[in-house]
Image (cartoon, rainbow, N blue to C red; front, side):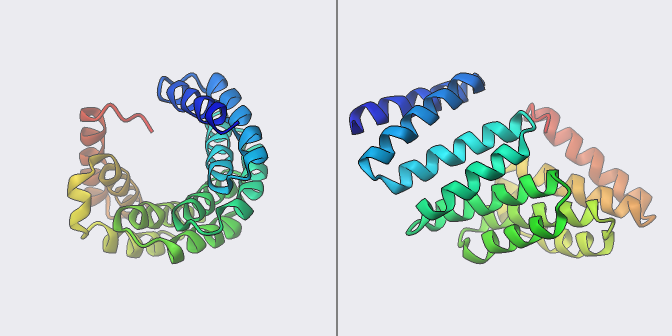
Length: 197
């Protein structure tokens, strides 16, 4: 069972990498079922998480939320898995316009995350919820602190997202020149990295 579960997991990962999300979802689900027989909690959680991310890609945020809630009990003992599940719950909640829930989940993820880069992504997500809530001064405060991190200089995709959100927030509080400059800088970085998100 565990060998077959691993093969299915590898097929899920390969299909995901090739953006064959329907096939990836199928293999992750099959892998999860076999890992349930094996009682491998972290592999069960990982499969649930990947399936939930695919559901988000297709706009099925309610289905994603359901899989993420099911994943949570299996994340005990892994801060990495637990943080990822909370972060994805924040994304689903935000997309379902449940902003208070989104902030709650992002804060949970942030409180258990130790590494700087994932923390920066979570802070950016928190700022994006504040942008949706039209609380631009709050988003600016968060993002101005985040943008100072030297780690961002090593990850252009994340830096572009932070710059874009900060630029947009500046624009919304009538700091037009700064906002436009940052959004253009973010756009340039995204083009160089073929990042359309």
